[in-house]
Length: 180
Picture 1 (cartoon, rainbow, N blue to C red):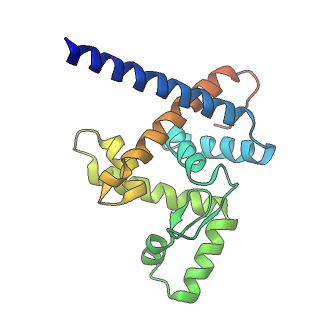
Picture 2: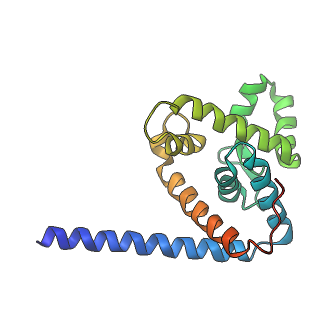
């Protein structure tokens, strides 16, 4: 009986925490700068073509706050989607000088960064296409590579952001125009 009570209390805590996080994230969306809002809508619109509008928009939000933070030296990753420079360097077989140019391009060219994020998501979708929880594993691996167990917290953040985005778009459906 005590075990059941403990499990119920844990479940209530988790649900309450998730709802609080969604509400906090929704408030964050409502206070975006006009430039951030523009990046959010652009990401959503471009992602719609690939049925990844919420995933890519949540990643852009999580990684750069819709362009507020375009550089993470600790990874290192750059741009709106914080593409790993090592991955991009490998993808383009670049030398050190070209790697600097690629980092600049990720920072200043939204479309290039979007394309790189899309390539990365498509790669992981292909890896997990016939496996259970393929979307979850894809998102975790976007952040953590093949060691996707390290992406569990990232996945939870993306899920919260997607819930907040859905709620935001529903609440603002008459005030927002998303290009198709």
